[in-house]
Image 1 (cartoon, one colour):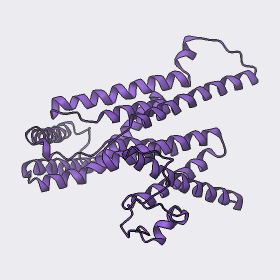
Image 2 (tube, helix red, strand yellow; image 1 turned 180 degrees about the vertical axis):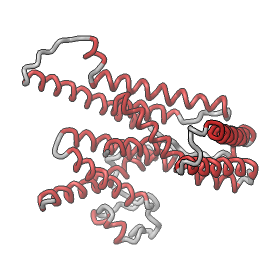
Image 3 (cartoon, helix red, strand yellow; image 1 turned 120 degrees about the vertical axis):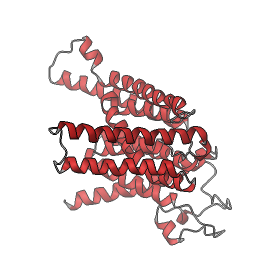
Image 4 (cartoon, one colour; image 1 turned 90 degrees about the vertical axis):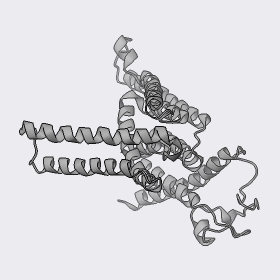
Length: 332
């Protein structure tokens, strides 16, 4: 890696830190319904206007030891986390796309995703306006990609012939289908919650996020994003879910769930070691049947608990998992 490339990456990282500082303002002032421009930066506790040296990304937080210079109240760890995350994401995207219009769009999309995740994590709120910007950015990029493709075809001397294939297989059509598919899938899964636990499985904001991701990635990649988001949500949810069962003393549900997890680990370990394989049809069928029964029993206990004591259900917003999956797909 040459000194020029290293210098460029460092410069982009610093720019990302500064953008992250602004995203903090957007997150907090969206929640407080304030302008992101006026008034100037202030302490959220004592409302004292901050000096310019109090706003240096990450460095000011470390220099002030995480406390306000005026009232000495603790500063939220959110500030350096969002700044560092934005800096890292911007740098990785620049390393992938280089100096191009793709990088600019990727930066805009990632910034919107960080804001959406920030409000959802902090107050479990997703603002429609942010998701509409995400959809609009995806649509604008699709139009740009289509125009650029047509220009390249013209320069290469390839004649353009309108057909149903081109109509159905172009960036603009893809993002339209993607937005519709994202909204329909999330809304369908959300409404299934009424049959299982008497309430929506996901918030209405998650439906709009999925529509925005469909507009950004198109319907094909959207499926991968949704699958990845489910995996991320499960990883994040399991510790919280198990702790909730302990706190609420749901011993039967906890026992059923842990038994299912333990048996699943043993079952797939035996498969990996080729002790239980599809070739040993009877043994494999019996083991798989037991796994299915344990899974159904665990789910019944969980759904029964949600129906009888909905206030004990542990809610973890799905928006952060969606945005995390989208950021990973952007980078990869």
